[in-house]
Length: 218
Image (tube, rainbow, N blue to C red):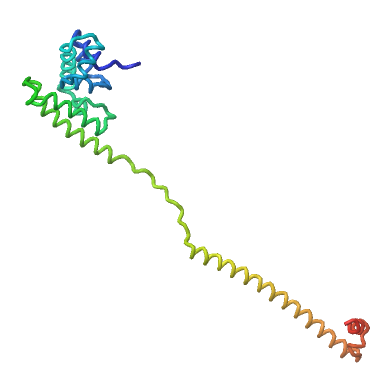
């Protein structure tokens, strides 16, 4: 359901004063700042309201002042409501509302003694709301910091490559040593067998047909 404009509620309240009690327990309209500006005698806002609502400037301002007195400054109003602010207000909203409220209620500008007495209430409420907004800002968790992976230095990368190259070279030389060792074992085995054959048969190894064939081919 669309909420009514603050100016329309204020004009109805003049005709039906009992609406004031109902409005005291309801959330404030979003555009309540316009009523504060009208009460502070903003000529631009008064002219616009008078033109769009077909009311005299005096009627418009009286309706705005009545709304503010009955809805913002009733005895049970908290500091946010006194400033004309809602729960989602910001520091910038507070400063803007305070500027126009003090312009309306300042004793040097407002001859109405009852209204000028609201000046101190606005000053006190402003300080309380400012502390509230600051404490809420401190409770907001900081944005999670995404840690980038550490970049390895060129020296570290070069050392890593040299280590890998060393490992590969060591593995290659190890394989070469194993091949040579196995070949040595094979030659030694053949030599032992040849000597044994020569001792057993009394025949020279060179006279053995296979060896002689190999020797002649060589």
